[in-house]
Amino acid sequence: MTLVVTLRRLAWLGSLLLVLCTFVGASPGLATPAPLAYVTSEGSNDLHVIDTATQKVIARVKVGDRPRGVLVAPDGKRVYTSNGKSDDLTIVDTATLKVVTTVPAGVDPEGLTISPDGKKLYVVNENPGTVSVMETGTHRIIATIQVGVEPETAAITPDGRFVYVTHETSHDVHVIDTTDGRVIAKIKVGENPRGVSFSPDGSRAYVGNERSGTVSVIDTKGPRVIATVRVGERPVGTLVTPDGRKVYVAHGRSFEVWALDARTHEILAKIPTEKRTWWLALTPDGKHLYATVHGGDQVAVIDTAVDTVVATIAVGSKPWGVAISR
Image 1 (cartoon, helix red, strand yellow):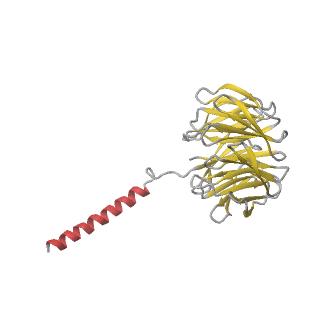
Image 2: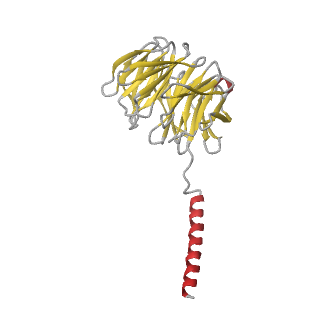
């Protein structure tokens, strides 16, 4: 009899624990929020904020004139947009989705990248051919680095040691040593290089060469080009998955995103996007790829398990950059 009562009590306690766990897990206050995607639209001068769980726009923030570059600070507290015509950066608080401040950023700011510790922001100034180094704590420009002709974008290596800058007109990539701000290498790639991204271990860089229709694969230890991969028409943005197995390439004229095997460079998929597609961002788990469809005023969401567009989200006019919170 005692054993039966004890078993019944244990069963009752187990049921109660299950209910409590379910309640706590479902509590809105304790649930982990989904990452947010931030999209700049250069035609409507705004930043659209997308909830990646629902694929819905949850906010629209007015920023500067012709916003292009966008990034989320490593601590997730701030979003920066580079505004090419107003020569400034807009800084947005991610908790309130309100503009905190607007700061000067040199002439014609475009590409952006940030140090892993979040202390230094590197701003590509296209017309003067420079990179402005800004302290994020003071928003003060502490250095101006001369680079090549018509720099487009920049990306920092995972260890924060080097910044790679692409140049549309001098057709090369400059490598900046972040310890002293010197350009330590100039790497010839294809014509009109646009996007650059790194493998998770930083051993490879992938550069989309728009006019050549190729991707240059760079061994960062050289640094030197070790492969040139023929892709579609007008490749722009590139991005490597968190596991390092695939490289995605956005195309401006063939209206698609390609998936490449990072090791063999074999074409794994060609994903139609219907309009001119430029830049890419992945959710932290690598399950969804967001692509700005500049010619369609929308963002295409791609399921990376099957390499298929699973949603399209209307944003502002001429969406350009996209970044996703961690």
